Length: 94
Figure 1 (tube, rainbow, N blue to C red):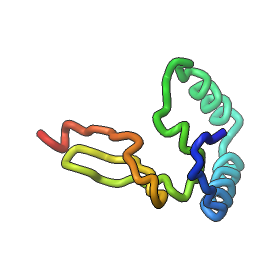
Figure 2 (figure 1 turned 135 degrees about the horizontal axis):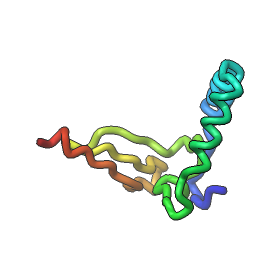
Figure 3 (figure 1 turned 90 degrees about the vertical axis):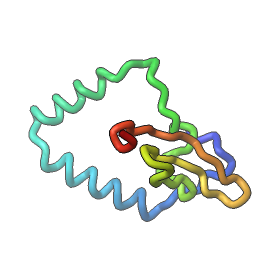
C-alpha cells in the first residue's frame, strides 16, 4: 500500500494495463507461465525498490532524462516536487 499523501491513482492507465496484461497472459503457453513464475520467485528478498513508496499508477510519478547519463524518477505533485530516484547509465557519458 502506498504511504504517500499525494498519491492519486490514474484509473485510465490502470485499466489499460490490466487489459494488456490479460491479453498477454491469454497468449502465453503453460510452459511460458511456469517459466515466468519461476523467474519471479528468484528475486532476492533484500532487494529494495526505490519506487515502492509511490504506489502503482500514481498520476504524480513522472520520469525522464536528466543530465547526460541520468534517467530520473520524480514526484510532480504541486507543493511536493522532488526527485525520488536516479538511474545512471555510464555508457552515455563516456
